[in-house]
Every structure is written in structure tokens, then in C-alpha cells.
Image (cartoon, rainbow, N blue to C red; front, side, top):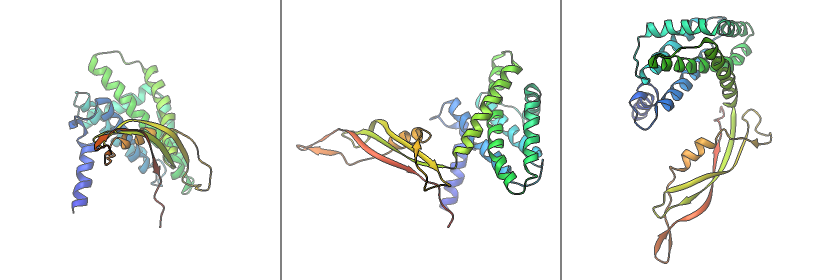
Amino acid sequence: MKRVDWVLNKCKEEFFEIENRTDLTDDQKISQLITVTSSICAGVAVQPIPFGDIFILTPIQAYLGTRIANVRGIPISQNTAFQTVKEISGMIGLGLLAQQLVIGAYKFIPYWGSITSIPVVFGMSLAIGKVLDIYFTKKSLGQHIDPEYLKSVFNKAKEEGKRRAKERNTEGYVIVAFTITEQGTIEDAYVLEGKCRSASNRDGEFRDCTMFNSATLRAATKLKYKPTIRDGRAVAVEDIPHKFTFELEQDV
């Protein structure tokens, strides 16, 4: 029961009530909302009904719109957000409609269609989230909304999202070094080496990558050590290496 309560509280903190957090900037809150929602939409892509997710994704994206608008200080209803998604779709043009048709077409390929469409849906949803944020921000400031600019942002973010979705099947490690202070806390962490490989090919070679660097540096600051004692007093120790490993759980 305690575990269930912890999960529910974590969901509230990380998503449903993220606007109440004081340790994140508005940009960080929105980035997290967009990433989580894009992951949910990508999960919807696994359902095998051709064109079925067209009717599921839009309400989810509209809900994301209400959350983004709320963080930006302009609360709106779900219906208004739904109409906004439709309006933005019109501004973006056939690019969005074409993506929906591509997703539906993938579903005609048994099993692999759903799996292959995951990066497409994640990328599209991430792009819509970024466009929604720009839309609401400009609306709140009374600024002109340029459809060509929104289309450019959408296309760029879509490709970024597809790349990020593919990277989710990646494992690796990061070696950092830092200073252990007199209190045993961590300061001045920096990356020595970062490597990645596909989780589907664990016999493959590692390659240089940076995708785990930010998470590693954040994790490093949480470490706590017993202070080093020299001549009867605690002293700081510099350039201490530490390896963080990122592995996906394997099915048993």
C-alpha cells in the first residue's frame, strides 16, 4: 500500500500537479509535461487498429494544451484546448494530417506496424506540445502567431522527438569526477566519459554519446560520502571518479 501511495504521489508531483512545484522553472515544467504526454501517446500507438489512434491522440494532446496553458498562467477548458489543437493543425497544414495518415497506414502491417509507428507518434506529439507552448505564450503576450514559424517548429521538433524515441532503446554508462567536500557532499562534478550501445545488441561495441550526461550529473549531486579525515580534521578531496551505469531491465 505504501508503494501504491508513493507512485500516486509521484504521479501528482511529476505530472498532474507539476504547476505547484517551486523547484522547477515554467520551461522545465512544460518540458516534462510534453515528454510524459508524448510517451503516453507513443504507448497508444501500440494498439493495432488502423487509424484508431487518430481519435485517441487528439483528446490527449488537448489535455496537454490545458496543462501548458495553466503553467503559462492562462487557464482554459478542455474544449477550448481541443479547438486550439484543431486550429494549430490548420496552421501547420497538411503536415499534421499526413502524419496521422502515415500512422494509420503503418497499422496495416501486422505487429511491426504498431512498433514502427512509436517513434513517429512520439515525435509528432512532442512537436505538437512545443507548438502549443509557443501558441499560448504568444497569445498571452498579445503577439502575432506566424503559421510558417509554427510549421517550422513543428517539423524540427518532430524529428527531434523521433530521434529521442529511438534512443529509448539505448543503454550506456557515464564516468564522472567530482570533489567530495568536508561535509561529504558533492561539488564541481564533470563528465570524463560517456558511452552508449543498443539494448538489443549487448554484444555490440559502445560508442561515444552524451544522452546520459545530464541525468548523471544530477544524480552525482545526490551522492553522500563519509568525509576524509586528515590530521584530525575533515578535508575536501578533488577529482574522485565514479561510474554510473544505465541498463534496461530484461524480461525474465
